Length: 215
Ligand SMILES: Nc1ncnc2c1ncn2[C@@H]1O[C@H](COP(=O)(O)OP(=O)(O)O)[C@@H](O)[C@H]1O
Ligand SMILES: Cc1cn([C@H]2C[C@H](O)[C@@H](COP(=O)(O)O)O2)c(=O)[nH]c1=O
Image (cartoon, rainbow, N blue to C red; front, side, top):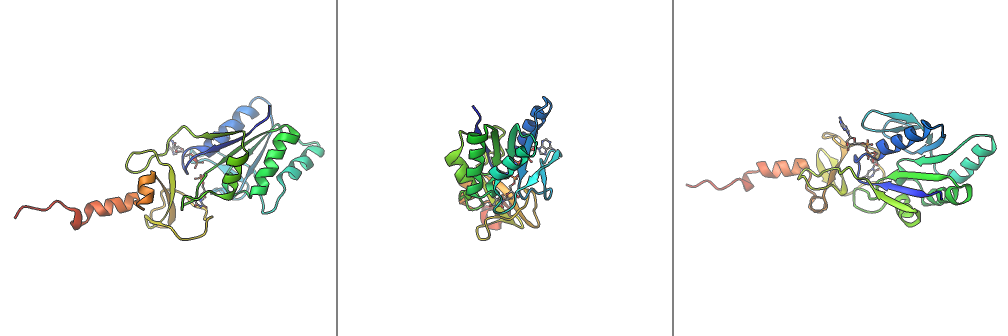
């Protein structure tokens, strides 16, 4: 039975790498995939992993009908044995419904990859729809770690290393961007306390928390 599978996790946990591996393994066996993405850091029409691998992809536009796109592609003699959708959190809920229709009406497997929650720990609308519709939700096994060593479960947005809680839901960016707007993965405890690696380091160095010297 074809499936809609949602592979999810925090930023930097290997989602795009897995997407590229699925693509590689299937194309190595002569299958042909349709790869969708949206707002990948590597630029328009790219699906990229931090391990350095990258492949071309169809850049999804606002309001684009993904089911109609597939039907069009097939009716023009194109092939699509499976579909990969990376950065699926950026897709609109209707586009997730269209992907579910691709599975049900065209009998094509759809593998979607994305983060579930934003920097305020709120579900992205596309991810919410995926959780609602997917046949399977798979949380990636490779754990990203918080600076404290615990499993990272949340995505923080940072400016100059400090966590921010105001701003647009979508701001394309990367982890390890100390000077600019960036992201850092944290455990829930440190996300709730807004404690990034930089602020933890600053707190440890603050005279307020130094052990009191005997006089
Ligand atoms: N230099 C490196 N050596 C080994 N693994 C790395 C290196 N750089 C990144 N990675 C791995 O790649 C993962 C990020 O992969 P990526 O597919 O880009 O993540 P995602 O799509 O989930 O944001 C990291 O969690 C780490 O496991
Ligand atoms: C938390 C959060 C993230 N984003 C953006 C930042 C990146 O461009 C992508 C996630 O990509 P990755 O391959 O999973 O690292 O999402 C955002 O726009 N808003 C957020 O709140």
